[in-house]
Image (cartoon, rainbow, N blue to C red; front, side, top):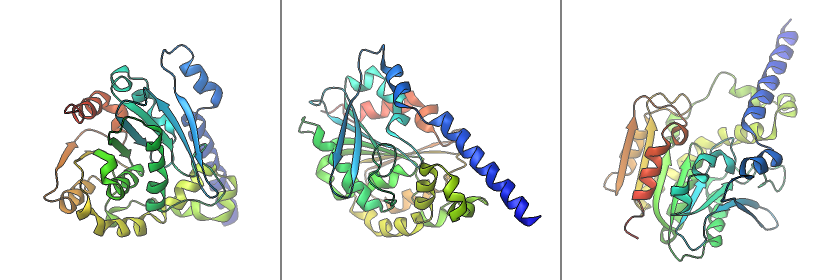
Length: 283
């Protein structure tokens, strides 16, 4: 009976994974159809070396100030389609939306790249596609937020303003669910989508990665805006309190939205757009 229950749970888990990804993932054909009748379409670049690959969607003139978008886990560059399609943004910014290493078309091999520092170092290469000579506005959401922060710490001269949305930053507040441990089991991983397996690998290294990031917060030199929803079931809202503590004395703005969930860039697009545009008005 125990084996049967485990098998039934495995079938349910893989079924839910498939349903989730069919709803969330877009094929190349769907992406082409999405942009077919749009005046502005992305140009795609792949930056690669012997160990890593970075896929970048570029929208807008490369002589405009760069806006670098970093997704969470799982995710893809087209998770920011609403922003990419917004003429108010692509007429003001050169938008660079990446597949984080391991996700989407940034897959080089089967090994998960769970290092926040390595991801930040590699994603920074996307900024080389911009020819404005101006520093970037960098936005990271969910698991992409610590990566965005690390990038800004590593390359302060290349970042004008940092936006962290629904950000898991506090290593003591990492959320684990009752089913999380199942995703680490080899028989389960065989049946799961590779993006789910990658997200699981990140999940179980995230606490250690955040502890490495923790002593580096005082070295952050760029202005930062943090946004957190009060009804976020994936990221504990108290992460905002942690941010206030480690960023004390820094040029930081903290925006708490009591009724918002996790996907603030989708639920509050006008607020996010206004903040992004205001961040570069002095140019």
